[in-house]
Length: 240
Image 1: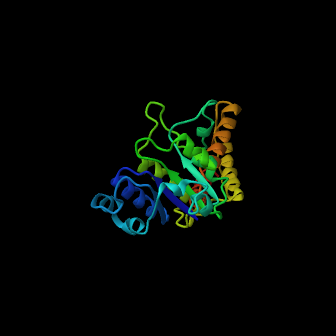
Image 2: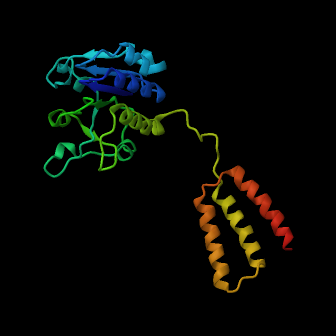
């Protein structure tokens, strides 16, 4: 289960936009720690659109919830706590040495209770807060302007998670061509090429290699493979 924590949120609109992004990617559990604004005001509800329920069900916690010694603590409620940051670390700032979404999520055990922690709209999480978390996550972006709006960053991260955990796979009904089907296509192409005249044998071989690369790199579907085989069969008859 994935939960989302907003720590010290300063802008109602961003809270609403994050709630909307959560609903887009099937996330429901929102926790807001020490907010500086109302998460159910008109601006937040307007930005949330059809995700108003996410806002209304959000849990509001004091800053003590982010304290390991507190009786009611994030560190007792979750197995894995992931800090998010746009400020990259260095050898002298080890707490901010982050992972990218792709690297982190492909190795993460999503059966655990996981929480993503987003910091303040303007300044993010402090080093002290990041040190308390198990992992640090960042989104690669331009060095000229690396800081994304918090709601935009959240949407990207939620999408990366959904690619792995989501049930609504866009291409789940599409079947890729098998290796055998690709080999049959290449065999027909090679037979046609063998019947064509080239100025040198090397040029014919270059054609064969090029077509092999095209077929193997194109992620051709089974339906496309059969359509292509039909076309190649007709073309093959033309050169008989």
